[in-house]
Length: 113
Length: 115
Image 1 (tube, rainbow over the protein chains, first blue to last red):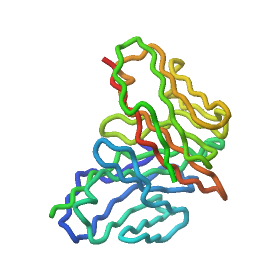
Image 2: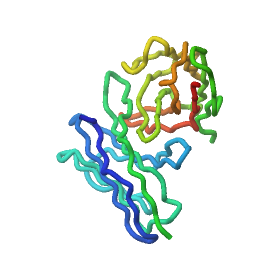
Image 3: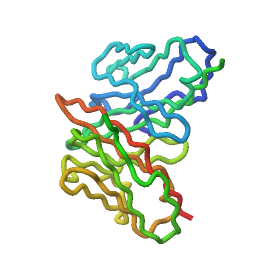
Image 4: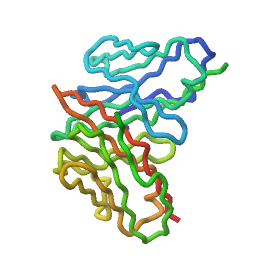
């Protein structure tokens, strides 16, 4: 079973709508959670990090974390065509001191003008 | 503020050849990571350095792969006797760990094609 699961896409939303991206993880001791945006042919770009239960807002982005449910989500308000990309959920697992990231397979988002 | 840089950006090689990639992290970052990403998948962890010490290697990293980070600055990833299955995007990331937190920032990647 994959350690980080993301809701299968592709996901299409109209411009101006709220896009909701979901992610679940299996390792209960995970402590750090990240959302990356990846445009086609480019490398991942960090857009949000969250470490505590609850919501964290940054501009049009809100990350939500529920450790009891092992669930993290990303909301994008007022979606723009430029938000069209693959969104990767990453979980920081502690293995020794590495804190390497385990990624989901990504959700492809298309924002329709 | 310069970000993580990687060189080359693209590499095409024939099966059986050796290739070497370079990564220059963000200057104040003490941790450096290598990941590999194939089409339709998220990046997979390969190995990690804290300063010049290689502290962890994934079991994905076969004996044909070796990484170094001399003097705790730039890092190199070498693949010997390349195979077609090595074709992927090789990503380098760096971070500065403080208070148990350390966001990882990725470079542009090196896309390897093995023919």
